[in-house]
Image 1: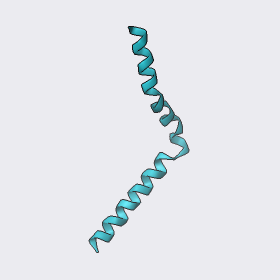
Image 2: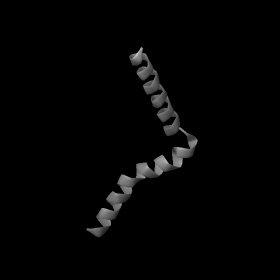
Image 3: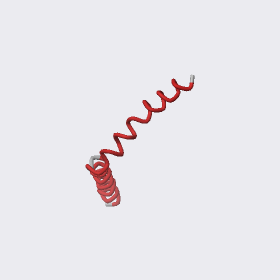
Image 4: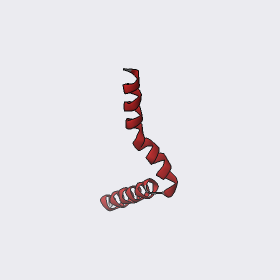
Length: 48
């Protein structure tokens, strides 16, 4: 019984996280985060 409840809660958390990550509101935030390594690399090359 307890394992079924725990499984249901974990599935709900997973689905909630998936919905949050794929939300259109987050698209810009994730695009900016994806560019961070490239921006840091470019800044390092300019300093050298």
